[in-house]
Length: 295
Image: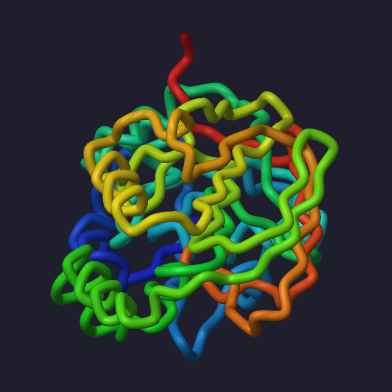
């Protein structure tokens, strides 16, 4: 039997997956797969989804946003489950799914997954946790953690923007020490992003990012004159290339360390990340995935 473990978050985004479960099952049955669904919630976590796991499972289908994907990836990596994942982007934030060009329409996404071949792509690691898209620290990075789940589900991305506006009074420099073989920085910053993916909040920050180059894209927004920061933020929203700004450092590395005594939280794919100090690395081709179109 060819089985697919289907892990879905019914609360992701606008609950779109709930009305499309039959479509997911129907398309897979046509291709000779049996869908074994598991509904995650506050009461039933990821670990229980794998209680019946055996060698008949061919891949893990995940319906949710970046946070849901991140939680599943951490579980399979920590439990040596070496089969591919595939993503149905049904969350509020689907940055990594967009990076790999997954269609937002469920039927198209399923067909793309079923017609693809397994590809090995890079994976980020921050201390003892993995991340698929981005690790961040500084201004705005805990917006997702602070945004009420009901607000996310009813207002979508607008909920993030409204919560972000609340943080503007806290706009202050943060002392960071960043070390890598490519670049060392010891000074004040507003924001730092380490990408395995390419976008955050649908904004194309890490436009040089690659799926399998074995490198992470590091972006540091330094403290500078108010006018320079406003101009940089304007460029960010317009999607302009950012590495020409004197307020920004952009480089690639396979490993870096970050130290800070600021007492701020870190964020990985919308979930709370580990405390400082941080050791961040790229696990080259550390994740098997379906759905990337063959070229």
